Length: 350
Image 1 (cartoon, rainbow, N blue to C red):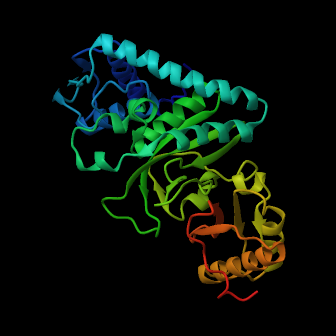
Image 2 (image 1 turned 90 degrees about the horizontal axis):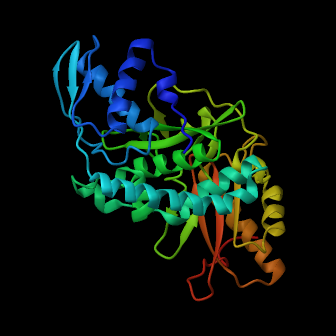
């Protein structure tokens, strides 16, 4: 499989030597890995983690614990392997088969950058559920790796980000696992650890958060594209990455640019809903450049007004659910099956 080793590429020479020692040892599944370089304990630990984030196929190592002994100039890493060699060989085949199934679908989009990446994004969102139970356990190793994402179909953000990286690299898209914090309100606490991705397509870099694009509701599962190819400015609204990362300032492959889903006025919004009313969902990003949609309350109210107007014009009895991402000024209208509860539109002015 192809692989992009970004963290290795930005390391100074001495750190690269340590990276290679650790990488070779993990690849051979060595019980003891000697790092004979003048590095501090925390330096070796950091390099070790970067090796794991660069290489999702090192899923067979316990990545929640780093055991070391020694002293500066002579450190011994003691990795904990989670599976036997026979089990690893079988898992490698299962992972390869999973990737091949995605490849069959993705081949149709190999000449379209946006649709190829979207296919990989959607394949992870559709097949992987967030593993909330693993957050309560100390031994949920799979949830943090591609085994959880690809085979168990349940993972946390780290496993999801590694799975997306592996798929992107496999299809020639450069991709990094990004570490940091994330909070919907943009206020970060000690429990807001998060992992997501940064992709590079041609000369353009974008942030992608597959975990946050996987939205669950009590009544339906919804794929979101709020975090599909964001700029640095936009991701910083509710994410706080750490480390040295490329600046993302391109917008060409952002979901809303590619689908022409921006609105600046109430009239724009009403026309967009009318034009796309036959779809299962309608998604848009509201701009504030014309003095409208300046607050989340205004965005919600005007969306309901526009939707009510279109539904009355069309004599529709569809049952919509409205979702909003207030930080990013994004609105979504998802149409449910007839038996599900409908939003009461009568109380909203047209």
